[in-house]
Length: 276
Figure 1: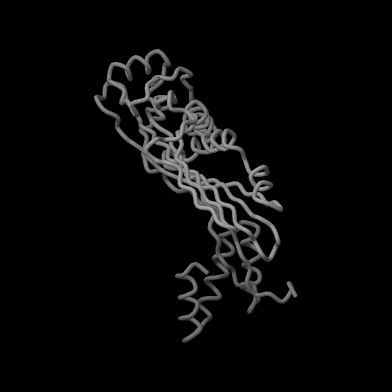
Figure 2: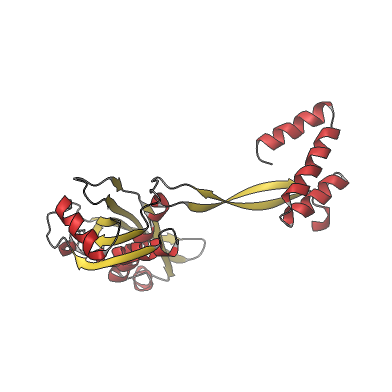
């Protein structure tokens, strides 16, 4: 039956610009940990645990502070993997050892760090928090209990430039990561699900990758559909498209389009506009 199909899906990778445009002179960057280290892994007191339980459902929501060193290291590695800057270095020292929240670096601190690390500017992790929702449901169709741990991460990153009084940019994206497990009982599910310490560590590592797509250009995959039948030109053009020979493919599509008349030509124009 595949030999009779007249439409095929085609994936196209294209680059999206980042939210920030870095001048070409900024080639060396240091990633630093300026998040409140003393709060690592703790549950925030002003976000108490909420639990609901009956015969079939258990649900709890907790708010955590992530592991700042893990997120900082992950952020540095993710930036380095993109090969956008000539050099990415990481500052191992935690600059904020308090519990009072975020602490904006002074101009003198920024100048001193940039000079000592021999970089053009700084990218600082300022905070990493997360909301974890634990849920267990009974699935009658399976005769099993199904549990999920769904974590939403909230990293905050600031860019510091030497000789500037304040941070030049603040990036505060969010994203989610989850784990699941099944079992014959609620206790089985709780045993099989990721444990709290591992969850905080893995979510903290994931959080370091989240700001990168906002800081740097990134690739995205889109899907288009090709008509591969109906005429020799459409068939041959689809072959050229698969081979990446877009010049010949487009030439045949234009020939095919120009041979259409009346209603068929209008339909072809509509299909072209919607990306088919």
